[in-house]
Amino acid sequence: MEMNRSSGADFILLGFSSRPQLEHIISVVVVFIFYIVSLVGNTTNILVSYLDTQLHTPMYFFLSNLSFVDLCYATSIVPQMLVNLWGPKKSITYGGCVLQFFFALDLGATECLLLAVMVYDHYAAVCQPLHYTVIMHPVLCQKMVLSSWLGDVRDQDPGLSL
Image (cartoon, rainbow, N blue to C red):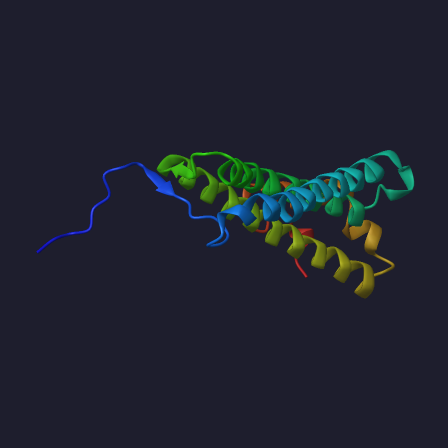
């Protein structure tokens, strides 16, 4: 019985379509332009939230962190994809694939946890408006963001319970 084995340590990437001449057009128009728009938009969001003192609220603090996660997520995937689409060698090593997969999963989980933190922030703002500034104090906001980045979903602060 013959077994299917791979002797190389690289994965061969086939690209977007069966027409390789379209890959450069697709990658420039779609991937590169959207990547640049994502970088500019998220960087602008972070800078405006940091520079404008009226936006130093929990909502914009969480939104800035979400923008930073999006920057990291896009940067962990798109450059390697563009190299594979534009370069002659359309492959990725096993280690590179595992590393990219790890960052994609880790940053995706961080984004989900940050969205959950933002939901709690909105809940406190809508359902407890008079207690909002007491509930969402800066130290708690920083702990919640740090917990999202570290993936620690344990309740570290008794004031965090709903």
